[in-house]
Image 1 (cartoon, rainbow, N blue to C red):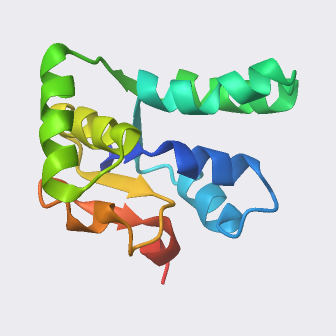
Image 2: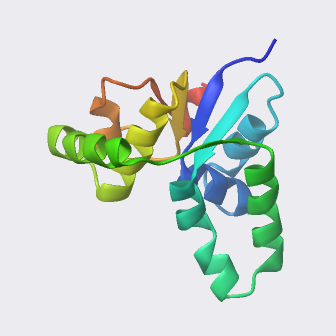
Amino acid sequence: MPGKVTYLDSCVLIAAFQGNHELYEEAIRLLDEEDRKFVISDYVKLETYPKPFTHKRQNELEFMQCIYDNSTHIETSPEVTKNAIELAGNYDLGPMDALHASIAMSGNVDEFITAEKPTKPFSKVDELTIIFLSQLYT
């Protein structure tokens, strides 16, 4: 039986690839958990794919593609965008963070994991169970 359905924020994948990131070990540990079903969206791909593509960082592209291939994909919709605008206004979220939160809500995930700091506006979003990577294994 699969465990929690977990939406991965882009910053978690970036932390997992960049060995020098302060949350690298936590990100790798999370990705190695077999009892989680990972969920992503095109917004994750938009934030993680262009830079390595532009700068021809093939290893990073392959890493990201492996994550995409082994995750469930949530489709966007006009309703996701409408809800993101409301979330941004209600919680002072940046546009991409609001889109991530909204699409995660539309996918009925159990939790949303981010590498953002717990002091960021994400901590106020009541509609999702937000888990901060820095606190996941403490």
